[in-house]
Amino acid sequence: MKTIKRTTSEMAGGQRPTHVDQHHHLPSSPNSHQGQLPAVPMETRLRTRRGFASLVACAAICMALAACSSGHPNEASSPSTGNSSANDSDKASLLAEALPLELLLMPSEADYPLLDDAVDLLTKECLAALGFSYEPYPPRPPRRLLDLRSRYGFLTVEDAASSGYRTTVPMGDPAEYMTEVGRIDSEREAQGEPYLLALYGPNGDGGCRADASMEIWGGPTGLISVPGFEDIVQLSVQSRDVLLHDEKALTADNEWSSCMATHGYQYDSWVDAPAKFLLPGSEVSTREIEQATVDAQCRDTNDFERLLFDAETVIQDQLIAGSPLVQGFRERIRDAVERAKSYNSPD
Image (cartoon, rainbow, N blue to C red; front, side):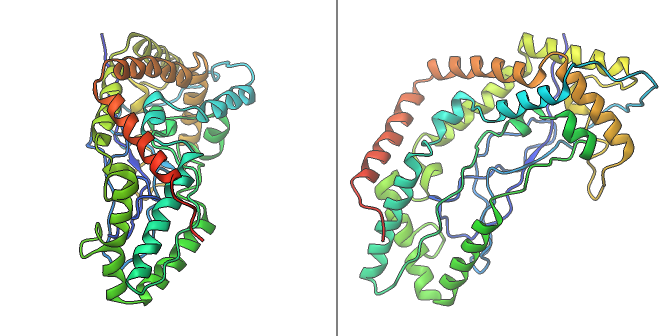
């Protein structure tokens, strides 16, 4: 029995200041090791404290650069998948769904403003006591921790026909948000070293910001410092490994491979297909568009991404039910939300 090969992927993370302003910036994924499926985001990316572009976290995805078999098309017709626009619409609706571990890892979009505002309020009060002012970042845009585009090599016929395997998803946070964050960072820098030390401490994980985060989150750098976060992340890595050997996932991969072979493309697994096109500095080509279009159509023959999502949902539910760590983490997030509710929003 074959197993699905793992692919290498990198979350588009960018850089951020060494001050770890975690109430707005969720952890970005580290570069995955070659030969592995992309790991759940689990590390913060830092830059020198004199730089001030914020983290672009949990955003658009770079597709795999794994080893692949060579694929050469023949003149056979594309696989029939019915109404491709309807299939693409179904895929778009799938992207709005979340795996169980993402729901576990993330406070709700309703709770996040409470947590952000409480940390901002405490930070402002702390700095005021030291004779400094404080302007918070604007409200954080919605983000995803486990983006299905990277997890399953998400591909629609429409995107494939226009851009091959290259994502059409905008990279990072909205431009207007990043512009405002950049303005605030520049103004903080302009206040000089004493202000930065008071706000972030000497290593970027201290000062008034860390004290406020400890009070609300129970850790100095927001969500990723909540005790148990890394343990929950490892459950997500584990679920990916289990999915690689899941019978339904392997069957779907075999069907995809057979479909591609019918049309002249020889690949053992879907994770191999994009690799030869997504080389550094490469641009989309006619050959890439042709192959990607067939790839997307072959995926549609068995509702490929939905099948993987449903299979991993079952796997994650089982891991959650069997983990003694989950309840403790849930309680810590609930406690953080309750502490946040006891504070008024900042001015």
